[in-house]
Length: 432
Image 1 (cartoon, rainbow, N blue to C red):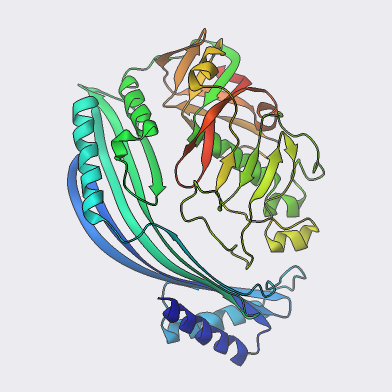
Image 2: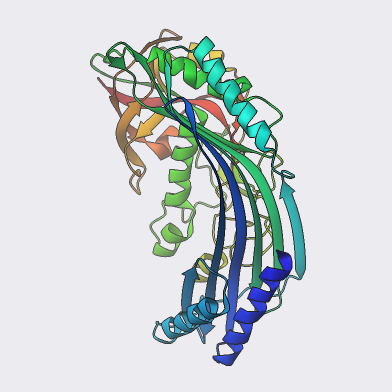
């Protein structure tokens, strides 16, 4: 596929030159996916799909144009570039627009080897059998297990070429629990891996969620209103931290000047136990990007170290627009540092609070305020996890919350994209 993608790049840059444009960068990918589906507890689908994608950004002076298509054929590519050129010439000039300087030619091969289709089937069948035996109340509504292989090229008119061949296994499951007429709310998990050596049913997070979902068939309301603690599951904690990253350190908020952390580089913004980075190179990340979308080799990007703001999640455009430093990457590969407490120790330190598995409330406001519903969650009372709770309102402020840490788990949960521990925070309002 490498030669095919190189040919696409040559075709595209010939068109860029012919149209008199000043520069361009492109992404071209080709991929294959092998996928098994289980619906309502039965194997329902086996399919192979192929995909192609092509995107290009062009500059006419400081005017940007862009186009995205799902084809690599000559006519489609030429037409896309003509559309991008027309868009550029009618757009407003922007001095921050830029094509990255030459960084050489690089090639990376990441992740799994060839697809083990029999292995995927075996792991799914084990999961079905294990659920029937160990979690008889679980209703597996859908399971999707897949193998995906992709060849990708980033190229620009300054001569940079970055080829990446990657392959990984993905697994996603949606389920609820049922007993007679009573049904729990839906729950789900997903992860990616570079092999399928370990049975899905030996994944501790999978077992935890299945067990807890059976307990959520019967829920109890939280009586009254109180201020207490949240012990937050890794997936949920990752979502909340990404909200902070979006509000405080990414392009949009920094360019607009709305980030509450705009002038706080080098200052404490969180408890000293909080450490946050974006790192596609972390060995726990499966097929993490080796090049940024704007033409630089990726590096670990530290955001918070020991509670202190140490960096941004800025693209080269955002950096040129704000005058701040460009980030080593702006990926979604969140790495949160661990602490020194087991899960049981986190819970035992809570007098009154909630074990929060899922939060439904939209994006927290720019000032950090959040209000939403705790789902698939449990009451904690006197250091012990109690009843599953019916959907319960919780509210607080994210920036205050990360300064009010009650404890951080000693082990990170890795889903192939991120590594995040359990953590406990004080000072959240719970409304029964």
